[in-house]
Image 1: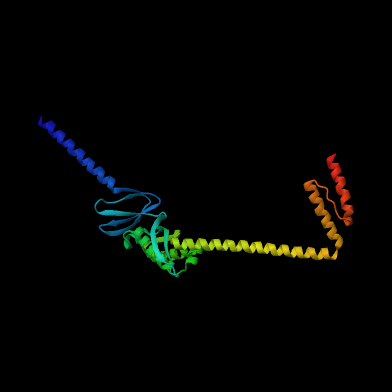
Image 2: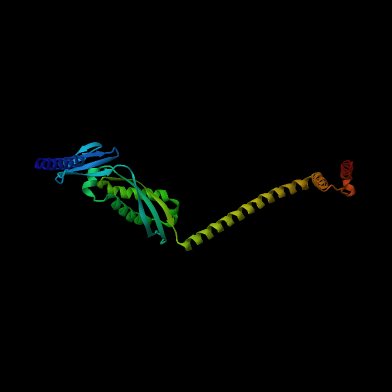
Length: 262
């Protein structure tokens, strides 16, 4: 009886020891994907960068900190700032970054993503404060590249690379939006009037040239009048009586009328 109890206790202890051993082995084995790297520490000292693939660590004695090497997109909180010409704008932006030296990142910055986002928001306000509103609206890409260059220069010692900054939206005050809409409408009206005036000017030159030609050749005037009368007669189905000087016009029209009636 006592022997069976001892065997049961021994079996339970053996199973418990086996479970502990398996848990230790599981914690000692890490799999690092291709897009990640891990910084290994042994008793608090840096051993090096390990991965990708199968990585072994000594439980309790060694630890690792994993970093993703892929590009991360970080939203920069909307920033209210003044342009150079004292116009208040609200700018939404996003920053694209990636870790290229995990060892530097592990040793120089605690949370690299929020750190880069905060510095980018400050840089965004500074850069926008140096440009006027028209420049901000028309050269958005150039300003974004300038912000990216400034931020990248600051965070490179952290082992982080800023690949791009995108200005997603620029919100203007409602009063300014209404003023810009009125200005755009006035500009469209001005262009329409200029186009109409140019057309009138070109038409007047053509009319003047035609008048000079008609004044030099009375026959041309009569031919033009004949053509106009023929058009009127064709559209209205009429017989037009002309003065004696245009007797040669009435005959063709009368013949046309007679043919139409038949």
